Image: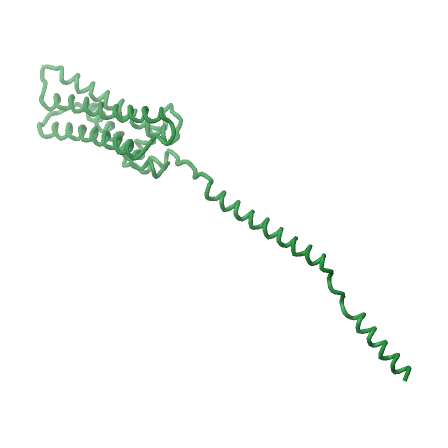
Length: 218
């Protein structure tokens, strides 16, 4: 009987030896805390990367991209790439209006020189007045832009954009009216003046396209 009991006791000891010891409560808590910290760090990393993706400013559009939105991209590139101003969007807009103003000024002087000849014609006189008015409209655009910029902040509001678009459109209408008047009256002007008219009208069109797309590009 003693041998049997001894064997039974031996079996109990063997069973206890085969069982794995349970982890201590403190070790389990440490493991949970570690996993929680790692999860939190991963979550913060994801949030930071996501926030950075949304707050990172979009790249500024290139001159080629901006000119591609106009009806005369080649004229736009050739004219504005030689501009002495830095090629940020604000400066590109101002440079385009300044170039339009210079073109209209030269054209107005050319028509005045024809108008001073003995063969003065009504259509020529009208063109002098029309291009003087166009120059005034473009100068109004530049004046308002310069005034608003001095105030600082987001200077190009919807009202300013609306005013500039109106003035440039009016200047373009003056140019078109001059062309129509010359055609209707059968008035012939030299090739140089025709070329000046073409360039002036194209640059005004470019300015109008840039200011129209300004908010989308900014």
